[in-house]
Length: 214
Image 1 (tube, helix red, strand yellow):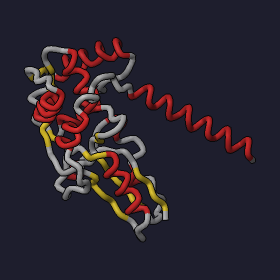
Image 2 (tube, one colour):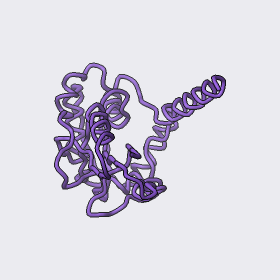
Image 3 (tube, one colour):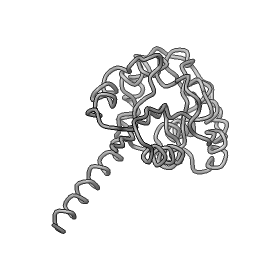
Image 4 (cartoon, helix red, strand yellow):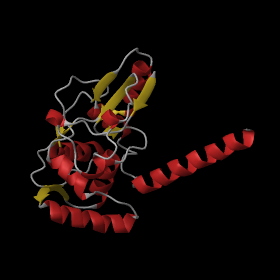
């Protein structure tokens, strides 16, 4: 069996998100072999990026800006729930395609509010044009040395591409997890670029070790 747990946005009504999210789409990479594809939306848990960095911004700035009206939706899933799904579907026969979403659905505006309440930093949430939000994101990115948001990701958010009508596949509520981890949430910025660099460096070192063994 070929098992491919892939971090891809869940697609609403068969639509595909723009830009880098469509490159090498997983449904086109199975080669006709039996496969399992998990399609999570937003992950939360240890070393997550989005939820932690929302908290980081709320801890440091007096207001929080959202793109447009902020009414587009997300269905976050806990990383350990996703790992359990990966093990389960990796052992099944045949092919499967699972929208890996959690128990709770938030609008982006409500998600920011929930994070702020969890960490004790409720801030005014203001809507802004996406172009202005992108410019502010670039400014913050220059400060922290990271790509905070891309135009493609903004478009995907605002087109409601991170929500599905599928039943929940995870059993952990984001609100419960944030209540248990509020003290640590957002204390430091999580860099996606650093994570990718470390992942590549680790893969390279593991490959070198295998070559030495051979």
